[in-house]
Image (tube, rainbow, N blue to C red; front, side):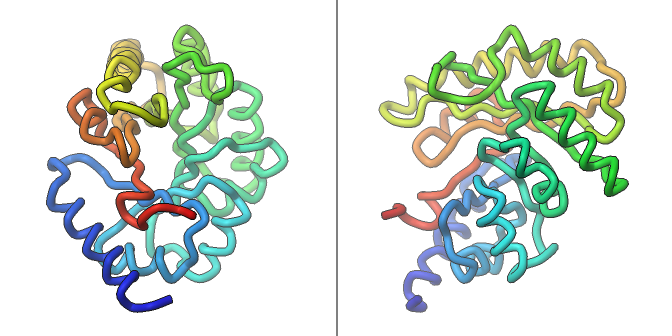
Length: 224
């Protein structure tokens, strides 16, 4: 890996950290990135690493360890939960009670309380994971009944491609669900994370209330 590409990553991170409004957290979405690129991002100021796959995260974690917060941002399969709860500090993609219960069980065995976000399928896209908007409140109530989970907020993908403006209604809907959940004063919940927006849409997401954005390409360059 040449130094030029690592310097480029650092410069991307520094520019982003300057650009983002106060109070907006930056997650470096490190899907398929080698550990040396992730380390470069951390050296430039990244504090949260987002991973889509437990196995990839385990390999990076062996190199990097607890220097940063690890956030799971992919689809979590039940058979991967045991390993995931050992590595991750927060899971952003809880979309069913079945998954929540499995995370709770595995965390109980470790004596760990796991912060979680509910993933919202705000576009009702059949090919995407996530709870449908009307499922969010019942799922939130169920999660607050699980002693080893702490509900911290919502995340959504929004449609991937195209004009970022087209994602605005989905971000707005997720923000409305977030405000409705906060108004319920659910016991034990601490609703203060709204994770929305990726490389092509993060500016629109921030305008609609995101306080956490998940950027991969904008930091690491395009994946081939």
